[in-house]
Image (cartoon, rainbow, N blue to C red):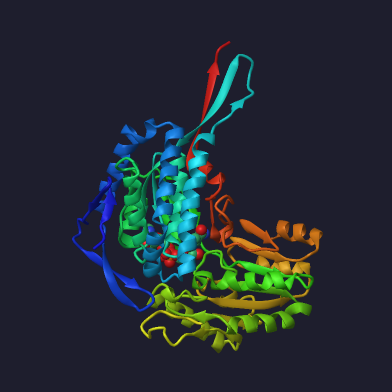
Length: 477
Ligand code: NAD
């Protein structure tokens, strides 16, 4: 049985209800979570406020940094344990789960070093005045986290908030809580004061909603779907609470005829099959210059046919999807493609050892997807790549910008002028030229434009969002 973690102690939900934890590799329950309530959120916010007022806000930036560094070291020592938890909970192949634990360590290391480098400025003003700005924490921050990369998103969101001097109340996804409850326990073990990091589990429309509405929450960092992002924004607007929204994407990989295909191909494949395509920044649209279209599809088709899908512990190319409803969602998209006469170029293979009750989906490469079809417009959140061709640079830009999203774009060309022209014209929060990282390293600011959200997490930039600026004008004559 799993418990909330509030004020450095396990806490049973006031609702007395629980949620089963399902292993996506076989569809079977193996643990239980607390189904939290508004009362549990209230307890967590009170614990956080008490910590902020009496301890956390009195620590120096250097002391916060030391604590975060201790947490990074402890997480590194527990990396295999955390990876195993997330593997079972989310169906991540072993290499992916371990990479996520390493990324969590990196976030804490990065933000440990950043604590005492965040400062304001002095400003020129009238004669007889000195003006300075202070970067101040919001206070108690709320963090609503999705199921696809729990450790990574906890690291970037909570790591940045703590470094900037805030305390945190975290609401993980009901589909993926185990690793985060354990990280909060590890934080207590290395000396984080009670109330600095609180984790309350439960359903989105119950616990998540209560968190976003709670008057004691001073800032909400939400990572998840655009539709829930809208609800969060509306709820927060009622009390003018600032929010950061990290939402979805339909990111294009734009390949020109002069691209280095040996470099591009494995990255194009990985960008859509990593985490079974359940990545906000998945490269889910492939735009290819016309003269390269057929030869590229031929090579990609071979690569897709060689992909193997199976239980997380087998550590194949692709693991299961998170849950049955996600699998059904992908099937619905593929069935729509079939009805619209969209051709499949190639599919990977689900291995025989995969239990029938697991949530598996073979990676699928589709061609000539019309730009207005939902497969070219909406997030599938599964390993489905929609290919289309373009005539020239102008049409490439037009297609790249033709969705409501703007999270990440990949550009593959050897022409230096075109690299920069395209990077300027594509509307997205990140652009990768001749490489593609799903969000990139911890140092790189990340976030979207349009319906992909606003505000930035990761890198130093995140610290500006996790603080508010106070201007102090002193008249001294
Ligand atoms: P989701 O929006 O369903 O859930 C995200 C979180 O919000 C969960 O913790 C959920 O319990 C909670 N929630 C649900 N309803 C709520 C409500 N009414 N009020 C408050 N909280 C509520 O998203 P998901 O299915 O968990 O994750 C997939 C989505 O997340 C995709 O759209 C993906 O692109 C996006 N995502 C974005 C990023 C990014 O950084 N831009 C990263 C990862 C995932």
